Image (tube, rainbow, N blue to C red; front, side, top):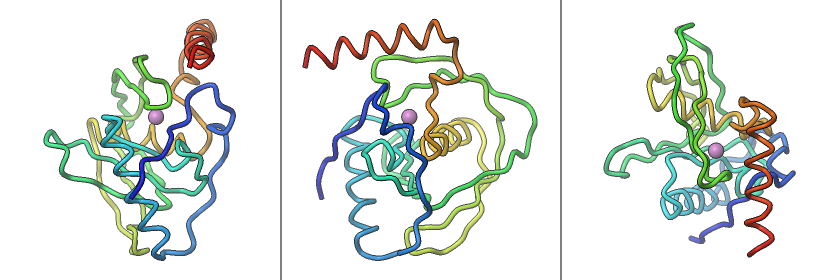
Length: 167
Ligand code: NI
């Protein structure tokens, strides 16, 4: 297992659209182990492969209190099952230190495959619904800052650029 480097906004590689996984082999399980290790080490509740510069449709999520219930989604999509929205203060490992209130559908049904290629559906609400939508956005090259005003986005961009230069 290995910790991977997490790309940070405004790195253009975060704008890459990921391609579907077709091979459910041992290299996929290795990658998923690395993603879990990287997510837990960074203290995040979700990580998309895009964030470690691997452009395949893979997500790991753990929204449990004890950080012991990893969920793995390969080629995930969702359908909205409740038109009501939920406002949630979202953070992102690729936008460290910033939280923004984003409004998203509060209930979704996730359609996905597991790491062996088996298809499953899962109804999600609350934080899992928020998280899966945030992470699927990553696979499509989209970031939570795309939902806020240009002014706020530019402020975050310049702060992170300053930080990256200082490193
Ligand atoms: Ni994120």
